[in-house]
Image (cartoon, rainbow, N blue to C red):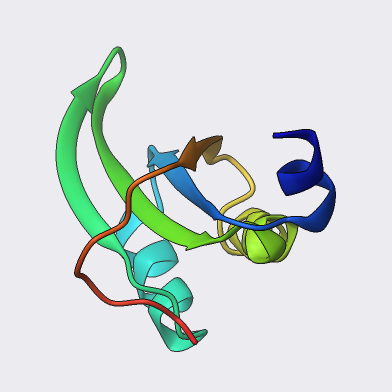
Amino acid sequence: MIIENRLAIGYTNISIISPHRGIETAEGLRDEGYAVTEVSAHGRDGAVAILHCSVLRKYESQIINTITRLDPDAFITAKNVYLVQHGFWNS
């Protein structure tokens, strides 16, 4: 695990909770070549968009910077992904 973290091998799942700019953020990420899954949800203060992106770990800081630029109010979490099967991946 230590070597994996240093080499940034593997995948990360990024979850974004956006209270105001979910659609625009999803479109902006897709324009940059990322696959995005959108989910409509309801938070404490009303409707929110939840976006999910799985990326190579070496791109984690890059996508977080992009998300922050597109939606400065977004709540962002990242977690390691150990099993990856099917889907669309940015090459």
